[in-house]
Image 1: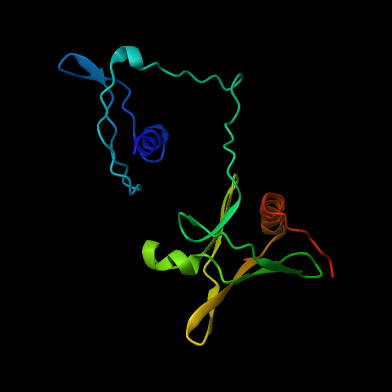
Image 2: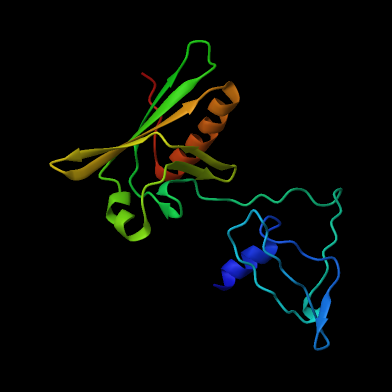
Length: 181
């Protein structure tokens, strides 16, 4: 729970930090407000002034902060898929669009979907962000789930390049190889 609080306190999206500290019982404190666009319900945090050090940003000295995220695939947000898929790629002759088809045999999401929720889409997550699709189909054999096929469509060369960067990271992390046919 402490991690959640510190993430919410550090996130510019989930809160608005007032410019001046407020004093409650003589102890300066900062107030965290709930953002209209956030699902996080912020809490008021009281920190002694000596514990709070103001941060000053100098754009010439500090560059952007890059957080390294393990590339992963999810069907339920927050639950990583453990099964490594078979991936098929096609690209148009002119290179303007392409399709990636992911086939998962006995995916782990079937083991946990009853506990954590329903499949809401196909999410490919890495340090650049999230690529997502809602084109997800389940395969059933004798009434039991046996596999999932997810399709991701790329409609421009930049989308193709972004997808390939994700796949390079994902394949390095999971030992996949690219075989051109």
